[in-house]
Image (cartoon, rainbow, N blue to C red; front, side, top):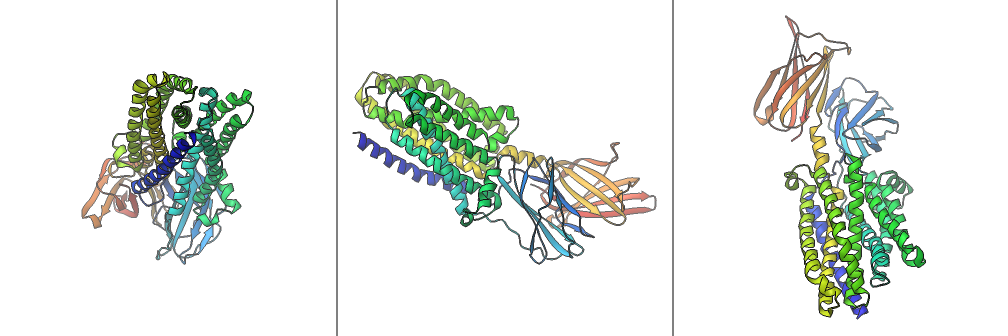
Length: 540
């Protein structure tokens, strides 16, 4: 009976992986085919599209959160890349030294950094020296082979942590000597021990924008280890090792080792990722810890419990009784932590439908509703009879637990899909950032910041200078925004002086996104008006 049941479980797991492949397809379809920004570039110097009279001595990139540079490259007009290795970090700004004089034409400043949540971000800024030329081709195509490898590694790591380490906790604390499912628990841990280092390599490849063929290169592994995900992998390996020792070592130390392993699961998940990087971290990191440990407690007990019930083990009733009495507070903590994290990450109900992250969350919520409903039926209708020893009820409960495990695996697949989607929280931070442009002429210069940098009602802040970066005492300043290709008449608004040396335009409505032309009409005297202009990009 035990061998046949184990074979049935193996067939169930095979079907689970087929469904997990479907979840991967859903994750791919739910996400646009581009590199996602978890940290957003909010300001660049030179600004995108700028035309400079001379070679800049340095470049700067300012992001919505602190970042760590991975690859910085300057692409010349002829397509030749130049590695930029000299840079400094100042809060959220990366200051990059330009090592050489640039020839005329359009250049591309390409950057790839690691954001605070451990995920890589890439992009580029175009600028010209002298006369613009055709821009060199710089693109960042999505490597679907690498993306699939990252997703698979994540799922297998979750199986190792939740079903493996969580399973050891169930066997040592709840099963009272029952060893049903121990082989599967050990196998899950071994999968995790393989998936954890592989996931580190995949992280390094993604960080560097390198293909799978470069996995063996030492730089790839050091890069992955240098991200916050490196801590997740190291803690995961420790948790998996503790789980394995709790089963293979002396019985006397099994419980403390299993408990430490369960705590390690929560700590591993709290070390990196979207939720762990969210503010306030004094709240989000403990919530991720509790959420991860709670998942391991619940999911890890499913297979050993189901097998014990199906085999009609003499101690199965005790195992079931302990699990049923402890799972309710665990589920309560799990639900509260999940709700808190979802509110912080999603922020608005509309984001559930309008973002890829939100759509994956809806899939997870649908699976959770099914899981909670099934668990409630098991708890209130079958558990008491199964504890009393009813043979057929135990078998029915075992089959139901197999379905619970299937749903849990599907949830792992959905959660792994979040690796490729920025949370609405990060998108909102990026959307609230200003868009800027710098205008540089011999007669006058200006810095224009439009906040927020997307369509709708905005505020324009303007700082004007003379051609030598000195103060310019203007009598009047008028901002003119135009976008002839959209058939919109120029938007002309007079600026006021708020008293801090700048000029300001409030309640300015920008109707459509895209590249606009920002012109300043600066009244220097009663007889002289200086007009300067530059492009400025408005986000949707």
